[in-house]
Length: 239
Ligand code: C5P
Image (cartoon, rainbow, N blue to C red; front, top):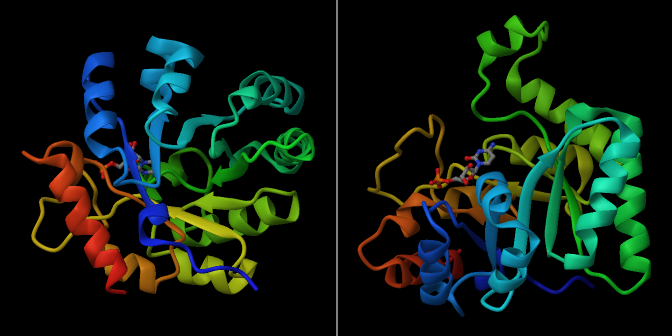
């Protein structure tokens, strides 16, 4: 029997702030109120693996580097990153079957040595709309392509996908409950959508089958980030 996920474990907050000091301050304020802190490409390029270790003192880390290269390069990059034993790490599903398989093998080998990292595959970036896909020679609708890439990611060994919460129900139906769905683009009722075009509330995203919710600016730009995180935890707990 799988244990239900505690509300706090579902909440992922990106450290999308301009400086190392701001990131540490935010991590400190959110300690005990989030399941994971997301370290993205900008922060990782600026501050490196040592900074990830510092953040892990506050919460488990989702290392959001979206690796995409030839299979051997992605495998070796993961082998260099996996000793950090972050909670989640990701690749682009569009890297194809051999690349996903190489990444999954590296992550499995890490887990066989006692590590806990799980591998997610990014389906379609939410910044790409139908027209942008057409211009790179991809005739499918974003949602249709996301589903195809989720099936591919599952077949070749990823543990889940990054997808829009709007796509989560179809992906859950096709790939099963145990194949995780991490969903950005979440906005509590009444907060600004900013540059996210298609947003859902935490409750809607959970009903759609999201495993983890990435909530950024409604928390990171709130006057009191800890209180904003607690309000979202309360909404998650009420689902
Ligand atoms: O502030 P907001 O809640 O929009 O932040 C969402 C976070 O999720 C950002 O770090 C953004 O880069 C990330 N993300 C996203 N859409 C994706 C993948 C990641 O918004 N498809």
